[in-house]
Image (cartoon, rainbow, N blue to C red; front, side):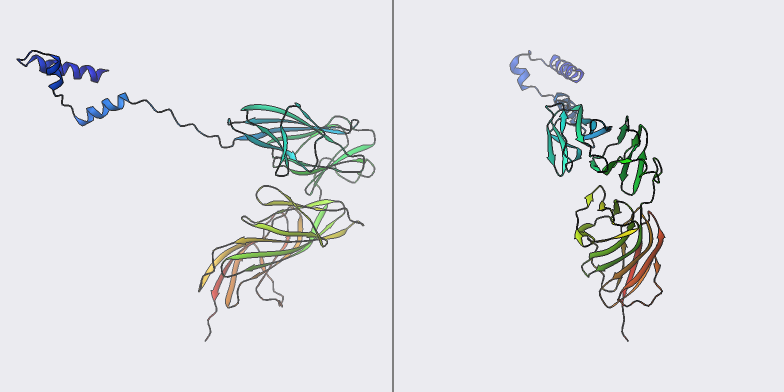
Length: 380
């Protein structure tokens, strides 16, 4: 308003100095001269102010907490879940794996659908919502497998156990056993867990609420082939020794894609987790100390090989199981001399197969890695 008043006062002062009487016609013929900066400020003052851009939330919706409760007498597992949607748009929030279907849901008008192998809550409402799912608990001696969705707060509560019974919880290679009422923390990243009600005498050798090595890798052999355009194929054979049904957990290298997986020559479909994490189920062996052979293959893509020389980084899967020995054969096109650095050792035995022969021994929670240097072989 102030710029307008100054402009009118200035115009009035100029008109007062003229001899002609001030009329509408003379005002229309008058000129007002201002600087460009003043004009810019006047125009800006008349424009509507822009509303600040809305900031999108980092995630549109999420499962915030999950509390599982086992009722052995009723034969049910009740999951109470807290979900929140941060954006006014349709969302499908994963609650649990669809392999074990729920037998009831509360509230009854909750829209639960199957989407990408998960039971999902479909909602277009913002804010917090509560959902309760009920699953069936298998009979004694039979395992109940649940696939947990990722949840930052996750727990399992057992209020009461029949006399002489224990509850065995298997998550990957970790086993936990409850002999009395209590609460166990569940993995926040989700994944499969198996719950089994057992006779206490059968589980007397299992430590309570603590991890134990139910399996070890007695031997593993991988072959990695790299072709000139940078395509990479890795094939592996893993021998796992175990006394009970277990899940072989593997963290595949980044940016890899699983092709096939077999257990004892039978094709299996591993459970896929976050960040290339897979879980391969191994059935109960016929005898204690039996072995299961797991074969798998996966691919990745690197930059194309240089004509003269270059470097490339390769890695194998990581597993929490203790591994006695992991052998690794790296093959590039013929005509290259190879050398390496990394957390693996060269094999001193005389190899029969071409390529670079590496080995990782007596390791756990370690990813075999190697940076391969290749140079075109010169001929005299």
